[in-house]
Image (cartoon, rainbow, N blue to C red):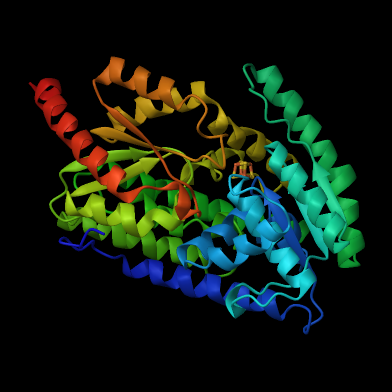
Length: 421
Ligand code: SF4
């Protein structure tokens, strides 16, 4: 294991987020004794549909990230393996099903991940695994499931986009709302949904300003800092304190820019990160990066959460949610990602692309070779595709990564001379 020779500059403002998540999860764990309902949300981020109605909601990817970052996967995966899951099944599915089946079978898990079983499952599936997960969880726990098809196939024209928005909005109205009313026991409160959306919109505007600051040299944060700050777009959507968090976050980044302080001391390499955040690898990969003064400046995944602020319309919340979700699905299309990467190389002055490919989720892996090829041809910027996983460390070979990463930096050095003359 590499030693840390260089220390990353931590952001003070991010500490609030860790506490806010811990408090929220504690509230979820207390839900049965406090007579509150719990929803397990799968897929595209729209937890405010239920949280705004007083239903405490956890999201599959977020819970997996929480567990992965705390190195608690082993126990959960063991339960899912006992249920017959193969080790290369989607790690988010193994997490949610493992958590549920531990509860159903009375297996003791660490207290911080001992979540109550769902009263409701909400699935807006963007891949087949998510539909399977929702049906399986419903079958095993007896909770009703909202199953919605956001139709994540490519939108080429404006007509395609509008058709999909109409299709999704209709399902939200006719499938999701009646089920949420049934579980919550009251009429759907649209004003509460609008209010939550208005708060989230303010966060999204501030978040985009934070991202824009990454164009500075040195970049004031890492992409992983931005990932930690995502909760206001996941389970803390519309929650009190989230706008104030983003105000403090932005102010801290602006201060760093003014003083020329980077997240990584003596920043030498500015990199792009494709795919999901690999929460379980943050320590290992992070150490390797920082020791070489390399920073992940920007990436695909954290910007998949409500990037188009003009689409967030609290006055028309269901239509707006449908529009935002159809728009967010574009991040899955390789042709869109390729254009975005080429744009980022110029905007954020990038030196290379880090492209983790997960054997348990092939969705983001599609087209990675083409994305790297297109970027090499256009900008002479190289890419490194390597195997890793969001939470399952078994798919990562540290020694191999280290060797390949060092060779990759040598290629960058050679290309930099050539690119900058
Ligand atoms: S297969 Fe990939 S996109 Fe689908 S649920 Fe799993 S991690 Fe998410």
